[in-house]
Length: 302
Image (cartoon, rainbow, N blue to C red; front, side, top):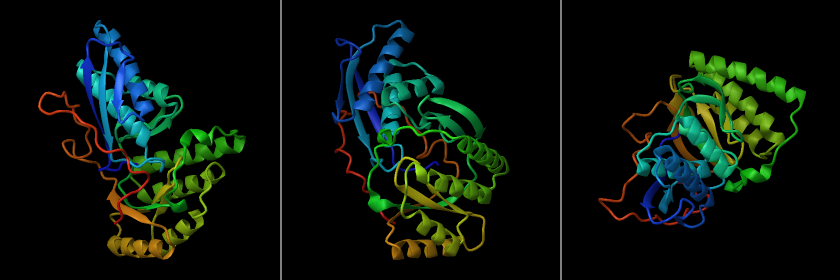
């Protein structure tokens, strides 16, 4: 689900006197981004017939950790793009995806921008391209389970039953139809059922409360991070009275002690606006520096 605003930024300053595995990262706790930078240095060096070198990688992020918002994937992708820019080469999204999975074991498909994809996170490959983008929706974001963080890799893998495959294929067909018709109501149905089905993998004690709120305020559905505790209620922006529904939703969330975070739209972003990643800064016009370390899982409230 596209969300403009929070992002990761990276600056890579090559050092020709070092080897590719000599990447010094700041802050020094971003091991996945460092690994991604090393792999990218090695690949870019072989691609350009230049001796790959390491350097300094400066990383800053506004994406909260552990909530299922793709913080580590954003760090990794920013690091890859910074190195690619420094080497002056182009890598297709599929190659970037392979590097990302090698660096963090499982990745979100951020390198494919806002396209609606069925993506194998642990394999780094697109299983199906459903279309340009999801139907436009207004989302009231919130945090469940006391905004506690989740270690994605600790979730492990789960036995896939025949029933899981049948349910998945049915939801996949409905999602395909929702994207093709830009049907936000159908998107809400699919998202809600998917959220309920994910309970056996990552149980959310407040899911029933969210579903009841969605029904009371006229939301078309709800969505949850399948690997975190961020969630959202979906509204049709073209439905009359959406503003009143959103205000009622915020009131109900507060009444149920579920912190709201932000109201945002999934409409496509400007190619020149906040939705784009920029070229990585080459370090000529200002001194690169890292921002303060990420502040846990805190998010701004409405």
